[in-house]
Image (cartoon, rainbow, N blue to C red; front, side):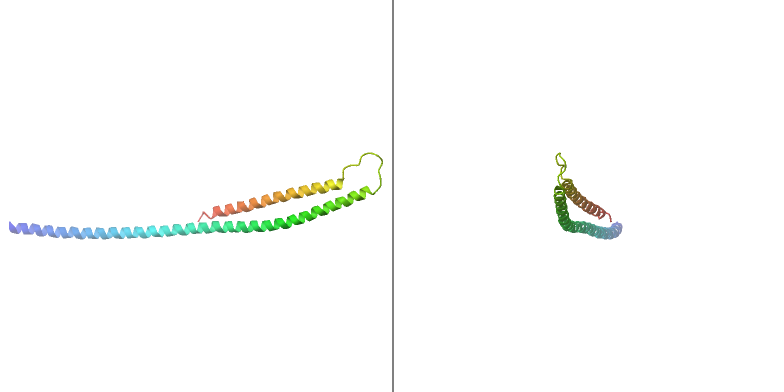
Length: 158
């Protein structure tokens, strides 16, 4: 009976040591799996950060380019305003000369004199030029804003 008890205890000891080895192996595999999952998570997180940085860089570049274009447009607008003012002044001077020449041409026969057509034309051209400048500025600003928006949107695609 004692031999049977010793044999049973020996079998149980072998079984227990086998279970301990299996448990240690499973624990090691679980640690490896967790380590691999952590590496994959870190790699995915790094890739996500890189993508976010790329998108932000694209967006920043688009904004910087838009600011540069707006500054250039403002300079162009100043030059165009100076040229337009010069043209308006020249038109007013031409209208004044035409009015003076018409007035000195001699007196007509009766009736009230008509409005100065050259002056009216100069005023109309000045108004048209001013409005065209306003519309051109709006169109340029919206074009730049649209291109910036499109570029920012395109930066969202990999």
